[in-house]
Image 1 (cartoon, one colour):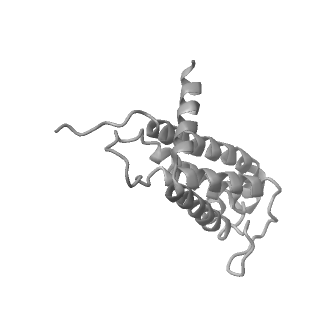
Image 2: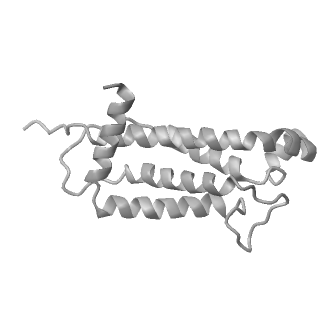
Image 3: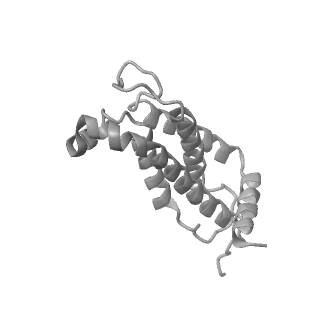
Length: 164
């Protein structure tokens, strides 16, 4: 069996072993991510933030997948109450954090981003930045998926017991 298939298999095993606590954290984490990324970018309509450019059709699925994967990654940090001492999971945390930040830039309004406006101007933001945003969304999802896969697959490995 290839390494990626083994990782997927172990990740599936870890998800099946999750208790209510992990699933609750994953759900709350996904909702929080959707709000933290979606509200300031106005993908989630709200009275506090607006957009100069309308939301694109792909912003919604990108935000949904980002929120789902971020919730799963966050939930891998929850320790099971009765779990024996485990080897620390393969990190993946840095990838997850970078993926989350990239998703914010991916779904945000191209001309509302002050950094992009300073660097490229309004026309540059629309001409150069806006076409790159779907690619950023894909990179964000790939990074979050890899972080989730690494952390989940390490949860399914045999636990290390303390020497007595």
